[in-house]
Amino acid sequence: MKILHILNDGPSKLSDQIIAVQSKEHETKVVDLSKPGVSYESIVDDIFSSDRVISW
Image (cartoon, rainbow, N blue to C red; front, side, top):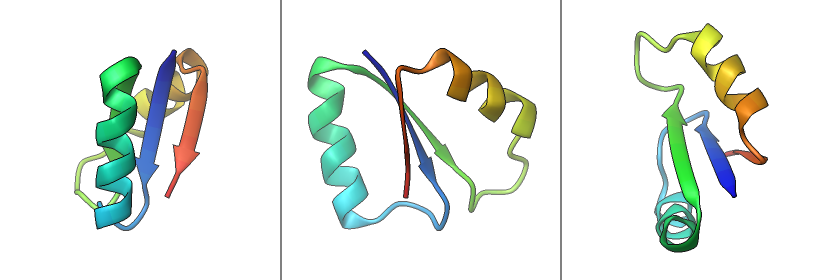
C-alpha cells in the first residue's frame, strides 16, 4: 500500500512515530508543507497515486 503523509506544520513526535511504523510494511512518502519550494503539482500527483493520504 502506498501511503502519503502531508505535514502542514512540519513533523511532530507522533507523526514521526506513526510514519516509522507504517514504513516497515508499506511504501510511504512524506511531504512537509512547512518547507519552502514545495511543488503543488507534484503533491496532486502524489495524492492520486497513493492508496491512502494522511494530513497532519
